[in-house]
Each structure stands twice: as structure tokens, then as C-alpha cells.
Length: 105
Image (cartoon, rainbow, N blue to C red; front, side, top):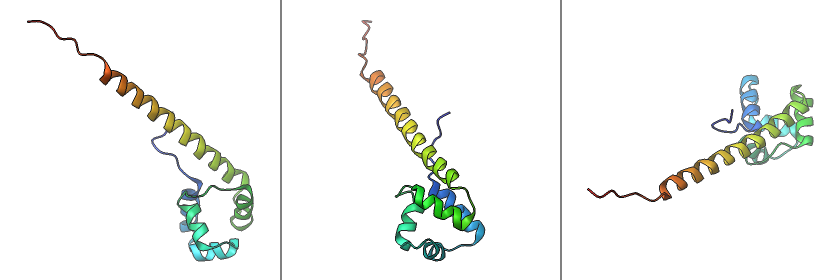
């Protein structure tokens, strides 16, 4: 089944941060990165890298492989959604481009 939208691992991390009551500033500091970069990751503007996943594993105890699987799943779903939308657009264009048959009354 193709999802309606792809969930970026940044959304999952944001939920984890809220659950643990970790602020963006605190996590950015612990990760040794600028807050703006962490914000981009949380908003899905940047991809999770293996190095970032390992840092999260060390800080949060969530397996790095899990983070990378979330990232791979995100891109897989982005592609599948784009393919579905392209197919729908092509189908719509085809049906609207079919000639109208006029009948003589």
C-alpha cells in the first residue's frame, strides 16, 4: 500500500524528543551541531546520515540501523508517492483528452 505522505525520520526524532522532554538546544549541544542544522533534520530538510544515526544511538539508545531504515523508508515512500501522482496525472490527462463524440439528434 502506498501511503498518503512519507514520514521523515526527523518527525520520529521530534516525537522522541518531546517524549523525553529534550529541547532542540540541548540535543544540538549534545550532538555537537548547530541548532539550525538540527532544526533542518527535524523538519525533513536534511537527510539522516550514518554518522548522525550513530550519534543518536549513543545519546538516545535507539539503534543506528533503525534510524537508517527510517530514512530509507522515507525515500522509498517519496518515490512511490511521486510515481502514483504521475500515474494519476497521466490517467486524468488521458481521459480529459479523449475526443467528445457528438450525436446527431
